[in-house]
Amino acid sequence: MKLSERISAAQDRNQPSGAATAVLERPRTAAAAIPSPRPTAEAHLSEPAAVVIPTHDGGTQQVPKAPGLDVFAAMKLRAATALFERMGTRFNDAAVTEQELRATAKEELSRIIDAEQVPLTPEERTRLVRDVADDVLGYGPLQRLLDDPAVTEIMVNRMDQIYVERKGKLTLTESRFSSEEHLRKVIERIVSKVGRRIDESSPLVDARLEDGSRVNAVIPPLAVGGSSLTIRKFSKVPLTVRNLIDFGTLTPEMAELLNACVKAKLNIIVSGGTGTGKTTLLNVLSSFLPADERIVTIEDAVELQIQQQHVVRLESRPPNTEGKGEVTIRELLRNSLRMRPDRIVVGEVRGGESLDMLQAMNTGHDGSLSTVHSNSPRDAVARLETLVLMAGMDLPLRAIREQIASAVNLIVQISRLRDGSRRITHVTEVQGMEGDIVTLQDAFVFDYSAGVDAHGRFLGKPVATGIRPRFIDRFEDLGIHVSPGVFAGPQTPAAQNQTGR
Image (cartoon, rainbow, N blue to C red; front, side, top):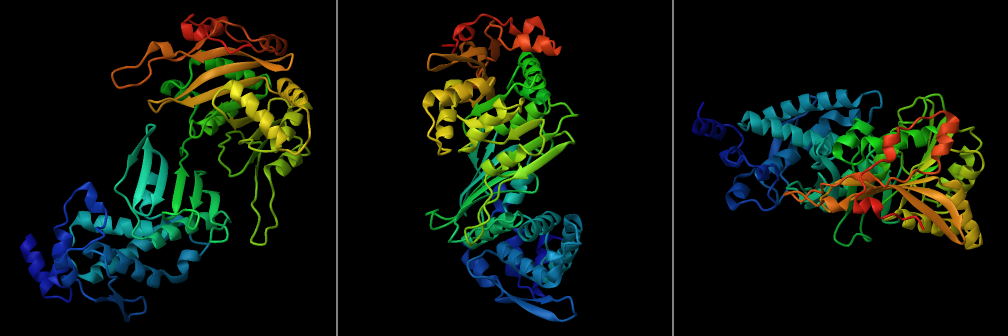
């Protein structure tokens, strides 16, 4: 049947042709997926005040049109309302799996759309079912971004402004929420699944998705322009050391050294700025841990993807509505010492727990791993000093530095360069103390002197400085072999710029 015949046939039914025309003539562009906030006058006049929808018990229900929406958005709202009415308590039935719930919801949606009697093309019908299913069962306009493997981070500044990160670059998407209330519902759906809460009395929250992706949300009155949501996605398949080599993050020689350092139970700190890939690198380093060792992980929100079987995962807990029940990283770290761990992996130290971590490293818990926010290996040492002071212990600065020099063996600095790539820029040995200064010595540094290509991407890679770390003697005592060529890198100007002092 031709398009004009379909519209004429729709006029003979209870659905006015204006709605059908508006739906059928929507342009097939990426922007068409976004409901227009301002309907045309023709679409507004032709849209019915209410539509009769058959209910699950054989009766009928009038679903009103929401004012201010275009025809397609109004149909989505009616379909979502009818779906809630039909599905009822099945949405909260713990015995029904997510896959079963989605399949049932799509079947009900098909019946609801048939009852609308609007002639939709297969593409429009598929889009309508997908959009309503995402709104009701998923995370609305964020669902497709979450399902896109190329998207690594999602940043919602307000309900109509959503940015994503792809290949290290930020771009504005055409996706948007229909209202501030819609955005708030999605935020509440996310945080409620992990037992967190967000409201005017507690207007910011850290949470996670089912796949471990990190979520931060801030709502008014703290977020002045509207609710803000940031999601740092984690790969469904954990990245391996081979992936990082292919990305240029590290070199095979560096990977061989880091593998030996983990197996030799050196205490390693991964240092880097926000969004540089510290947790990803920590996951890769943890893959080197022997399978026969007991591992305890401690995090604010569970993100690490440890591949070994003998793992105990601990997560901190915020205070409840009465301000009680909080369990901090520091308490979990102290408790972990009684759990007979072979390795302690702390997702990130950002407070007084750094003192407990250094003490654990110095009292027989070798091979611990953690991350810290800083811009260079030297800054990492200074930041650890500051974090130890946050423990509330009135320790002299020299005593703190001696603790750091004795506990930490290796600092791995990862940075996000201006071309969007993440690279390991330093692998630095902590050698000890000279006077009041913690001495550092680079084993690998990134070669910036190689320049950039035509697309602005750095051509350089981490290269060996040619200096053999002191802990290599420990490798020989443990029977761990490292190829002599690992430290025989090209003597570039970058390689000669060392941080040992």
